Image (cartoon, one colour):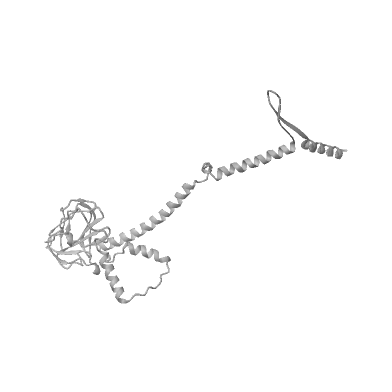
Length: 291
């Protein structure tokens, strides 16, 4: 009995879903029929479902394929992603450049303090980093080419014009007056002029600047290093006494030390004078009058 009743209720439910209804659209004033069609609940449900699916798909397309996607929480904008990639590459590049600079300036500090006589140049450091992942092909060259190439490289390395080391609009003061006993000779790692003077001769600062190093060492005696700005650095070695300490500011022509014969590398009373520009030692002789 219950089975028959359930079947009958189920049939009635299906009949309700499939029962046709006429939908009429008419004018409010004249009641004239403008549009009419037949449908049922099942068709209405299917139409509503299809409309919902289309609406959802359209909304998702609008959100994720237009600029509106940037308003979705947790979704990064394309500009932000591009900028992040750029900054990442820039950071890697700056980190590599910083490592090269640190190694370069450390080599300069070692040379100035007398720990070594060999400078590691930035170009060499950059090239050494690049060739780690490069398969180098052998290029044949005769001995004459190799000798000429080495000579040109050594000459150009300290060339003022090529390395943009010309110092313009600077009124230099000679640190001392005397005879040059040993000239600037980078091929033999002598990046200075040795000027013969008596012990106790006043040593002057060539420009105004800040003392960045004032120490005594066994090899070079009392040493002063001055930063003059514009990447210009001057070095004074073998002094018998210094009058300035680190972080002191000095004027051009101010007496900063007294020359001497200090240090195991000294061969007699003289001033060992170095001039650096852009991290490269240059020959001071054309820029000063030591007579």
